[in-house]
Length: 177
Image (cartoon, rainbow, N blue to C red; front, side, top):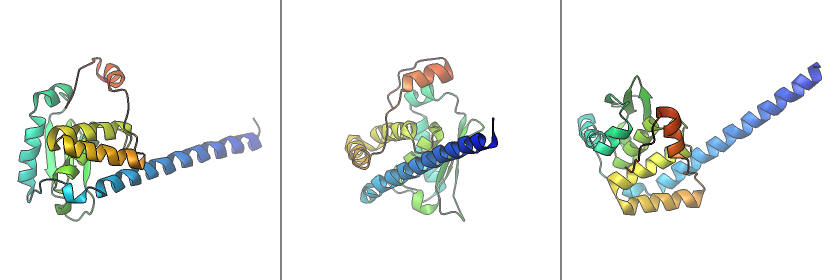
């Protein structure tokens, strides 16, 4: 293969990767905009990390949740001092949530918990889990509003949960949070 062909292939590959990154950034921006539209309805505010932990114990203690996410050993909540960002990730079998003061509200906690459950940033898997969590723990009205804002801003939220579980866990559990 000539150098010219390799360079052309590399530039096409770089161009595709660049377009993909741009799409991901736009999806993330749309998701945050949809959340911002509901700012006055972000739900209950928690003052301390221990209050957040009690709230999460209630979520993780739900039998449906335990059955589906049996690979989770527990969770850790960090107070997020020195950070402007809230974060949720799955580390060594535990959910790790970093929550600065501003992020200690129901909607943001569920947002970060959805990050712990998914692997695709702010993609369709994340959005699907996020909406399920909101429906179960904040109610149907909040779910419908958030879903409608997602639709208005073009946030993708559909994926094949059954196919994923068959592939990842060898099972096909029925799960409706």
